[in-house]
Image 1 (cartoon, one colour):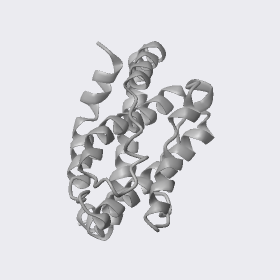
Image 2 (tube, one colour):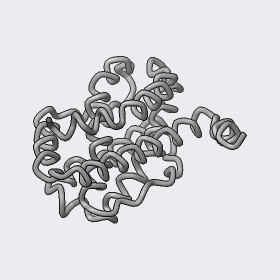
Image 3 (tube, one colour):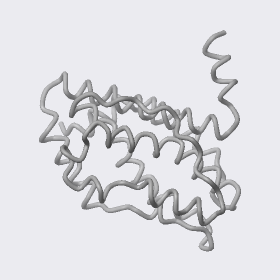
Length: 187
């Protein structure tokens, strides 16, 4: 079985929770779309920076082409919005963790190709328009090549879950629910 299917299964609940949060942003108008981009930026900026620090460029040769923070910041700038401070991102220790983190970012690119249809034509869409099926297939092939043992796949799944939580935290912060989430966790 391809590693992507194992990662998808291992993080299905995390992905579902994140989709539920992000589905609350109304992409059909400027304000909702801007908030969506702010929530994305809160996750993306920190995760991409953490992957850079961990050395992802040594693992994924086309990493510079896969980065999307610049497109995200450009879209926010076009909306006269400043990027938010990044949510705390996980540290990626080892190749498996880096690939698990990147799995979430690359998967979001596929989702973006669907979401962009809801965004009005007069709004900037470079962040959501970055889909490339050939790049996804190449990444899936890389996962299968590099993650061959159960411990490697487990490390990738843990990192992916951590990245999903980074994005969930950013979405909750943008939605004004951070305090509520903390209170619910701590009774």
